[in-house]
Amino acid sequence: MKKYIIVFLMLILMTGCSKGNSLKCTSTEVVSENTYKNEIKFTFKDDKVSKAKLTMDVILGEAGMKNYDLYYNAFEQTFAGLNDEEGVKVELKKNDKGYKVIIDADYSKYKGQLDMINSSLNKDQTKVYYENIKYECK
Image (tube, rainbow, N blue to C red):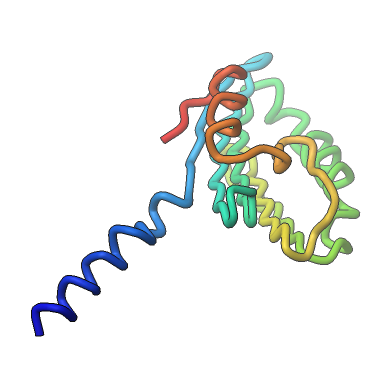
């Protein structure tokens, strides 16, 4: 029985846990009274990005709220074609302060490159890349 426990513990140590295969990067930026809160959750497989989920909360300032439909339509047009791509799902949700954009990409199916998600790097490179552009990564 001790042998099985030792083998089991060795397997756990050798394979690690799934938490080690993920990275979450966040940033908050204010531009012309509008606040953009971004969160990107990366999942890695074989030291490459296998999945990424970007959540962007856009909180509009006073001027932005006056032009709410204009801002919303611009974002809608920007992301419109992505839902037609295999492996990418885009949601755009209105709320009383602005809107939320969610882009979910599965890179086992999607072979393109999204502007806000750099999927060409390994985990360590991804962390350095996003920290260099003012994201906090954990």
